[in-house]
Image (cartoon, rainbow, N blue to C red; front, side):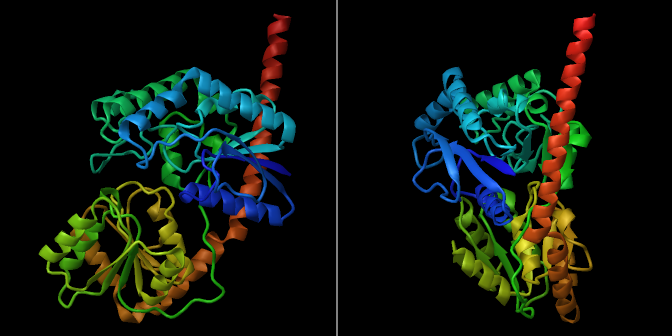
Length: 425
């Protein structure tokens, strides 16, 4: 099978890109052919042929005015048309059997497949909430928000949901409104893969056909052998409001002293604030590791007894949870988003009420029972092997490809029938 992967970045910049490249490698080992379409960059993957458009940056590496300027460029009709033409030309040249879309927003327009979808089945993996939420995250001002899901997008503007910027929020809201009116996500995409039931439910709330959205969890590499449980707690991830590290610290402080050891790896905008909070709570058992390499994260998981994922936003399908389970570590997770899909309370972890330190403390106390740690670790690894291994994931993905082809075929049969009916009428 010839599969065209489409993503704005074609190098491992974040989770979506890492997932796409890893899946592509797995598909290629099974004999499938894979090519890529996205933006030009010196670090782009070399594992398959690529077609690119010029690079546009919206991140913190450039000035705010330049970011807004690039956003206006990306939403301009000339650049949208140029990207679509480049994609159409690559489809014509490479002739894929299927297009697998990932994160394309801003730099690539959602309507990128307007022409290609008439010739090739198109499937999208939902790495975020963009089809139903203008700011991608259903999270605003430190709280979950679904005001724009299935309704007006004006709350995005009034709340300045996109990085607190009125200009960015206006552009995002206008884009979402345009694609809703046009029906872009219904016309140009035949099938969706959602990494969690929570995301699927939000898509359905937003008016999507339930038969076109399938839940397939992401995957984690399963080590050959697991190590016995270590000591203490570990959090690895970004230090920002939505990750709930403050809730973890407050919950830990509610336990009887001496507090369990907690090692925190990562950096972010709330790093200094969190260190001050730990000091004010008299948590002298916390070690701040800063940003560490992936192999060091694995070592920290080996050394800990429990992994913590205290998110206050609606996680899609947390890689942190799956990686911990794969290493044989039970997980303490909030009930936000897709987290409850991954953790089985009382078996391989516990799920607490999001943004509730007392609930976290209560569930953590259960997990800290030393007589249960080893058996929960074994259950965690067995769950990962059965549900989240690369082999299981690729098998499910290939099945989804077949369903995408069937949806494409049905769409064309329906169009042909309508055309015939119209001609007879």
